[in-house]
Length: 82
Image (cartoon, rainbow, N blue to C red):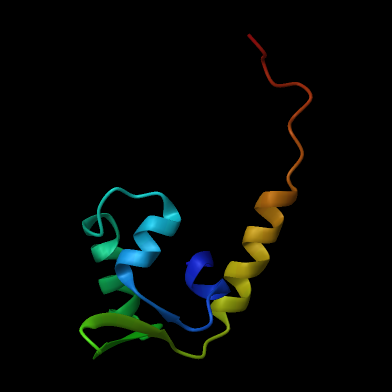
């Protein structure tokens, strides 16, 4: 979700899969379908490629906030090191 939230609002599944490090677009098909069903993105066909447009919703701000928190997390000093 964070990758879609950070985009310009229009994402291509193949480009998104590559950005996320997946070998195949099939790895993100179900999540895209779920986001479409939830009304968070809308599928748009055009110019020989499929795109998904991010629909306005407060969840996108929350996704960015959660990403920021995840990236700011410090390593636990009590973690077992081998």
